[in-house]
Amino acid sequence: MATATEAAIDGATLLTLTRWLSPAFPTGAFAWSHGLEAEVAAGRVRDGAGLSDWLAGVLAHGAGRNDAILIACAWRAARSGDAAALGELAELAAALAPGAERETEARAQGAAFARTLAAAGEIELAPCPLPVAVGAAAGRAGLPLGPTLLLHLQNFTANLVTIGVRHIPLGQSEGQAILAALAPLMESVADSARKATADDIGGCAIASDIASLEHETLPTRIFRS
Amino acid sequence: MRPMFDACSPSDGGTGLQRARGRVAVSLAGARLGQLAQSGCGRLMMPRTRGGPPLAVVLNTAGGLTSGDRFSVEAVLSEGARLSLSTQAAERIYRSIGGAATVENRLTIGRGCTLWWLPQETILFERGALRRRLEVDMAEDARFLGLEMLVLGRRAMGETVTAAHLADHWRIRRGGRLVQAEALRLEGDVTSLARAPALLDGARALGVMSCLAPGIEARLPQVRRVLAREDLRAAASGWEGRLVVRMLAPDLGPLKALAARLVGVLGAQLPPVWQI
Image (cartoon, rainbow over all chains, first blue to last red; front, side):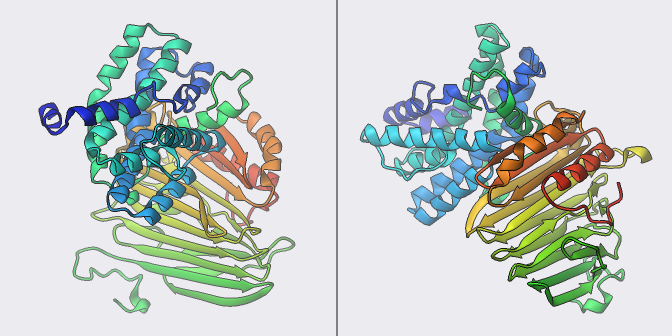
């Protein structure tokens, strides 16, 4: 499976995708914990095993899966030049946010992603939440959907692992081990999202949604969500 | 299409499945009742109430939903109408023998109108399958209070749910713009979903309450004071004329009691049909 992806991807594509979907790309991801800060503060996520379980839930039944489907839908809409469909996806992506902070998390990162691409002279995008921006940009640039989904999921998860490593805290290598162990799950989420439509969106990451609402009233907040 | 009059009688329709059909529709223009339609196993009662908006109570005479059943509720409010919509009893989603039950609810809330959507809980039984959709189309200055409570089996009856298929969606449009989308999906191994820390975190009952009205986020401090007194896991957010409360509870009792208190804090009244 890995070989097939490797064979299909050329050097320029690989470099563009890893640049866009890397922690160094200035979306400000480091400021958003997706509710994890509240879980750590409450002692509900307090070790590597707890972080790994929590991330697996968010990936398979929360924003991981839903954002992957939004990326796939936005990618297809961009490929066919369907601006109306992209507008509807942007509205849906924002409306799916469980609370104020998660809506801002998606919108602010999407805006920063689009701003950077425009300023770098790469692509002009209408402002939209992050998954729609990623899918639209990859579609417009003719980048393959499968690797886009995989790298997005890894980027999203790696950001949360970094937050866990610093604030639980965990060792750097334990963080990497968690990320490596989640790779098969990222593959299956990406794989099922490829052909999914907006009707397939849905999840049950309710505790993590509640954590993002609890985050609003934490006495000490390092992150914006 | 089978005739409506036998819609609740057992019949296999050539598929081997018993199917029930139910539909109710109500429209209010100001204080005047426009349409009141009911068919199949759908009934709509409008008991007299003292104070508050008129109350409409939906009843599914089939007593529950299973494979292939269809049910729908439609309400259209105009000219400043106010309405409280509830259900006579819990909605029971029984074991599916193939295919899901489908529920489509559609609420249109015109300028200056108020609608409270306060159904009683949905009980999802082992291997229940439900596809449910609530579409709300509201004017910018309309007021909507919506609630959904789901419980996985009844603990007092020793029931557990290990597998189910649930897709429960809300789409709320205000002034033509989609502002809230709820997408609950419980599929497959429900036991592990219910245990997982980012998912149901050990809860058997879950709920979401959403209020959309101009300036409603000003009630957030009051809502949070109510939540702070609770043992169950619930939290609220409020922004841009919206207030959302998400709840996880060990069982239905505490969830429903909390929802009842929140209804009052958000300026609505509990439908007298509610059994707490």
